[in-house]
Figure 1 (cartoon, rainbow, N blue to C red):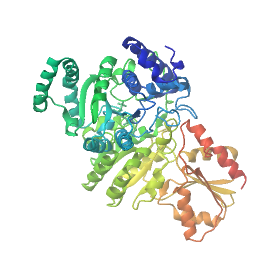
Figure 2 (figure 1 turned 135 degrees about the horizontal axis):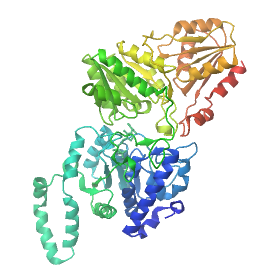
Figure 3 (figure 1 turned 180 degrees about the horizontal axis):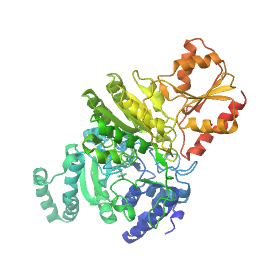
Figure 4 (figure 1 turned 180 degrees about the vertical axis):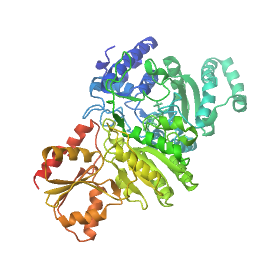
Length: 616
Ligand SMILES: Cc1ncc(C[n+]2csc(CCOP(=O)(O)OP(=O)(O)O)c2C)c(N)n1
């Protein structure tokens, strides 16, 4: 079938089951080809093709509210709602978003990127529908990783109590990004092994209802049903939540899925359909246990190999952090490592392999992970919690209330700090500086290169108190050097002369870029590497004030509550009046696209910086 011609999903309803399977094959081929060129979330999408087709067969997404959790698995939904033609632009600037996006389509009623919001949002839609006496279906779609998160469980708690009708599609592939963790997974396992009794029951009921004798039998069955259910049938955790359970259903069997969804539609109150799927279904990634195929960059379809690989002497920041921790942990038994479901993204495999008893994957549970780290620290351990900047936002109160307030010895490795590119507004790591800066006791630092990043990890492990180390998504040249302790709050003068035209103050990846430009063009500009964002180097700030030359404070994070604001506040309080130019991201959400393009669009690129500097 020509997927590019699909305008909306209505055509599906006329297809036979065989034709629906053919459609699934075409979509699978299309997604593999397309993602191999643009990159994107491959394995989650390949696992839900039949399931998404069945959903669109049974629901009317122009009216019903289909809410994908995270939204990374909504590619088939996008194709069926007329967006196949946009796939060549997937995750590129002004192109198709990698998640559900309300601006893109009336079929997208919700947006996410962070996990486990779908059930709470669905309850909102369901209650609003009931209040307005409307009749649409509310259909949250949530994975077995996302459902273990506290927010999802809080939502289930209220969904069971309010009993508003909704059909929860539970996509159980036994994988989060890598293997799912935690005891709830075992609970799902018991359900996975159970016979799909309630589906048979649904069929049986329908058949019995067809004639008078059958109705009599059905009545007698009902009288024993509840007692029977509790003795013989384990409907598991969802029963405890007061939510009707249907399943398990083979999530690749379109006929069974349609049957289950239609049965669920007839039930009052909340129903959960437990669908068993295989992540990566139908491609080389089918048996990936490590999450390597969750999000991919462009690859060769024939052999699955990435088209680009890191040059030999390059390392990602995340890998460098892990390797340094592995080294330090050899001689320090108190170092432990925590990740909220991001072993592979945060490149922690080596630590987990080397020190399995000191490694903890909490699942998608950022708040818990943070307080768990606080508890470990209070008991004398040295926890390193590795967390993406944007997911750290979830745990702000815990960093404040449980770590900083008690001044506990927790090191937070803030991965994916700054712009992340293709994942877009939900994933850019732009808020952490502003958020953390406000917290007493917190040290915040970002190195200019891998060597400095490693030194920061070493320094943090020898420091006592909350310490946040930011690092970007990037990979950089690397040479192993002896680790050095850094002085907290001390900046580095890279170019410094008293008669320079101006001074550029910056941090992180920007430092090298600016350094190279000044070097190549022999410019008379000072360059300060502000490695600590809190505390500031007040002595150096006083020195710069004495030079009485303009300062350009160059940030590629949000301007609000950023480095420049800290410096301005310091000078203001000391009645120092200097010309200060601030470059950084203005008060808005930054879209998706390559980091290079986004830096240009946001006016935080090097050309813009030197255009400003040349006018001083
Ligand atoms: C708050 C938050 N933490 C972490 C992530 C990173 N993340 C994206 S998808 C995913 C796994 C989700 O697993 P599951 O719900 O089972 O869906 P699947 O990909 O297996 O279909 C994770 C951890 C996120 N998006 N949001």
